[in-house]
Amino acid sequence: MPGTPESENPVITMSFSVEGRDFKASGEPSRRIKRTLEQIGLDWSVVRRASVVFYEAEMNIVIHARRGTLRAEISPGRVVMVAEDEGPGIPDVALAMREGFSTAPAEIREMGFGAGMGLPNIKKHSDSMEIETEVGKGTRVVAVINVPRAGGAKTRGG
Image (cartoon, rainbow, N blue to C red):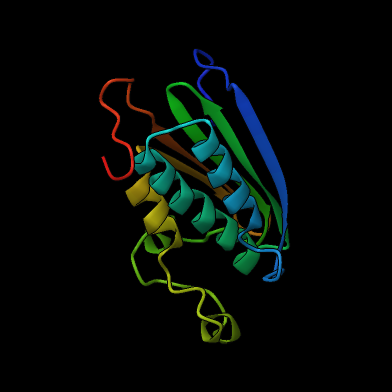
């Protein structure tokens, strides 16, 4: 299974359990990861991109799965997001990657979630993304956001 490249071991690893349909707690793991990225001083554009990736992955677990894990692997050159769930799996990955395609039930869409932008947004805001899925078992998504070398970084407002 894909994961962090062996050549760059994570400096910080954060892992969170995410429960399906727990909208009350949803967003907290993503916020904690974002706060950590800000505290270590990453470029605001990397923080923003990573925040989108982690939030979308977390919400996919909340919306579609029974439970899952959201993990951040932060190293000097990259931020890796690993989301693994126990859920229905994705029968047609190509279809799931189309903006606007959603299998979320009506009650979830009525709450303002499940617009079919999760996987497309993860792909759009990451430098690479891999999906492994098995129908009836679950899905694993790994996304990498590369961190620019020092000197080319921009700070908020600068």
